[in-house]
Length: 599
Image 1 (cartoon, rainbow, N blue to C red):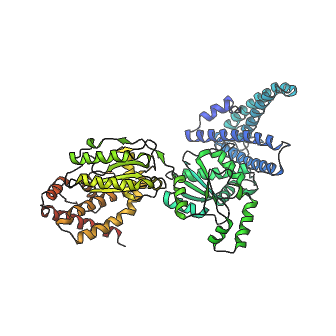
Image 2 (image 1 turned 120 degrees about the vertical axis):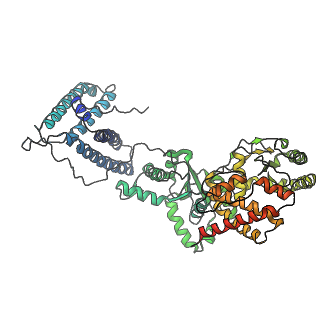
Image 3 (image 1 turned 45 degrees about the vertical axis):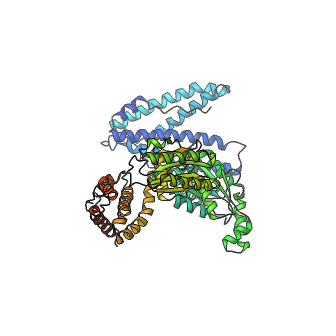
């Protein structure tokens, strides 16, 4: 079990002087001294490692670079500590004797001596000579603490001067890689794409970026950034473990700077050993995706001579690119269609989950008796089809307990395997017959594969979101997997759907009349609902949606009769009473929308 070295405890005189500093200076000094002691501990461990006779030449070079970086940080931290400790000095005595070293240099020596005592005490049980040295080391520490306290007292009283603290070191940078690095809490999911030339790495990363909002990064770029930050000439000369640490460090930096990004992609993975080390550091946070395709397919896709593809393959294979399939979490045969590739990528980028849905009987949805009875018969029928039918749910008005007889539609969502769609079609025919003129049925039939591949229309995505938020379903298979739909995805979907709704609303407005009132009103409500989603406002119910939209900047108040009034006029054949205010509101909305998008 790894043990942690003891903290650095300042002697009493220095501790009292530090306590008299301003809060800001005291915190800055505490941080610098604590980090200095930590770096000294890492230096000790690294210098121990580099002495091992089992290390290869590459590993020795790796350790030497790490030692250089740690020494650079050690000097920078000592200078930082001296900037604060220098404020303890009395500047009034220019003729005071000059001390040979700064206060931080003595603190640094005390840190090293503290570590030496700790390591010696651990080794004392197996080494007699070391055991005999331990009392002398404690004596040295007591003497050094007394000398440091005396120096602090002399400096504060003006009896001693301190030398200029700048060390003017010329190597390394002022930062060093931590001994152990872990994924940032903001680094939630990373996909790494590997494979040989023209296998589809860039195509895959581009799709995940567009479809799932991923932040796309190149491994070479990350390593170059890390090398620049660490003062390394060639990061590829480092060991696989060190390269993995550098990559994770850069990924953490990006994730901490983009806290709203939940998915990152990195490409191209050409080194099986470093990606395996990165997997060890990140666990399931990292998903390695290897894209496989035959040489002939890759040549055909590249549009270049076979020799050019072979030459690129040779370079990548020399680094171990073809071996990445071994540590990969997913190996995709990318010789098929782009639709098949994107379906697989969709499931990897956003894995579906089993969702606990709220199942209620049709009679609990506030439906008229004939509608509830027909719906119950349909539900019982599709349940009898077995595992081929995965879900049946009424969305829209019935789910929101806002059913209005003679006005509301039955929007039905059915999830079924393709093999069962024929039987579902027959059930839908029977459902329509049983409904008669009591309600209009609008079914949406989708397969499980389409959902888990995230081939979703905006309206389907919203329906799934509502189900996951607790809207009732008529039937759901216990092991049903659904894609998780968040509000951010719905807001982005609203941007895509709104233009089509606007075009349809203009067409309906051109034909405005009693027969089109219902559609015109519903499209106005839908357009306002989508607009509100873009502004992260989530209203339900037509009256509340129109009222909230009327508060949008620059949009006139939409003076539309209530849903109860409009639906009553529709049922009673008195549409002329409400048609004029609805068309006026549509005109206001369309004029405002055109002005918002005008160049």
